[in-house]
Image (cartoon, rainbow, N blue to C red):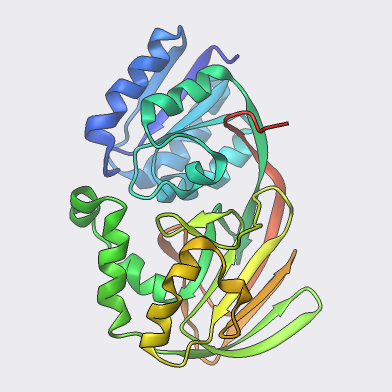
Length: 293
C-alpha cells in the first residue's frame, strides 16, 4: 500500500465543496501521508502533477471526467498508481471501473490497494478515457456550465440534451476502422475507449477499457423523433443491434468530415476533424475494486 499520496483536487468540480473533505478525512484516518493541492485554475493541474509526482507513491485525482482527462498525459508520464475521488458531475470513468459514486467509499477503494491497468484513447494525440465524439455531444458539452452542473449534477446532461435535440443537424463523414470503411450521414459519431459516457450511457454492451480496442458508432436516424426513440437503446448500449446505427470496432480509427468539426473528449472540446484515433495499451494503473474471479 502506498504511504504518501499527492491529492490533486479541482475546486470547481460540482461536488467538491461538500464531498472532498470527508473523502480526504477517510484517507487521513487510514494513516496516509497526504499532500493536498487545490490549484485556483484547473488548467494548472497537469503542471502540478509533473512537478510534484516524484515526491509521492500514488496520485489521487479529485474531480470529474474532465479533470482526469486534462491530467491524463501528466499521470501517464508520472508512472504512479492513480486513485479517483469522483466529485464531478458524471464520473463515467469511475462507473466503468466500479468505483463507488460516494467519494468516501471511493477513498476506501484506494485504501484497499487493488489496482488494474487501463487503456487510454487518443485523438490527434489528445487523450481520452471514456469517449471522443462528434455532433450532438459537442453541442451538449458547450452548453454545460458550472452552475447547471452544480445544481442538477448528472441530470444536467439530460436537460441539456433535450435543449440540443431541437436544433440537431446531420453531417456527412467517412469512418475508417482498421480495414473497414463507411460513409454516413449522421447526428453523432462516438469513439469509445471505456464503457460509460455522458452520465451513464454505454458505448456498447460488451465494451471494455482494457481490450486495446475502440468501439465506434454513428447514428443514422432520419429525424429527431427517431433519435428520441433511440435514446433507451443508447442508454443501455443496445443500439448496435439497430439498422439506423453503424457500429465498428478496431484498434485504429480515422474520421473525415466534409468540413472541420469539433470533437468532444470526456466532456471537453479539444480537437477537430479530420481525426486519427489510437489506443495506448495499459497506459494507466488505477485503484479499483477487485474484479470477480
